[in-house]
Image (cartoon, rainbow, N blue to C red; front, side):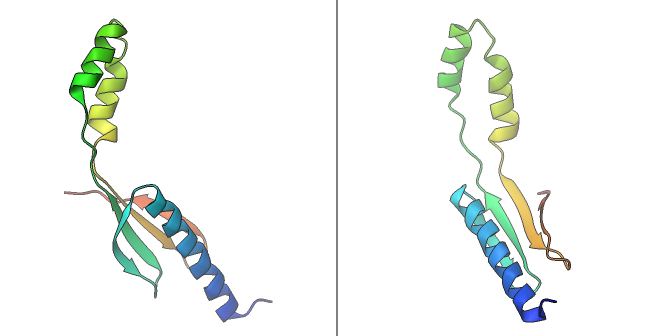
Length: 99
């Protein structure tokens, strides 16, 4: 049977590992609470190079338009996520909707 402090330490190590992975992928910690534990992370929106995408669009005879629309509408938007550890020690991640 595990002691409570050992489980809390394992959860904090797991939580810190998840946050390290996310920050290495370009997210920035907006809010963090080690007591519960949870963190809100944000990734800034990326600028789309429309001139470059138009050149690829012309070179592929319009096939690139699907990718270009995806990049413009989905990938270039800012992302905000919540990373937390629940009572059972399971890590989860949810999207935060920005208004």
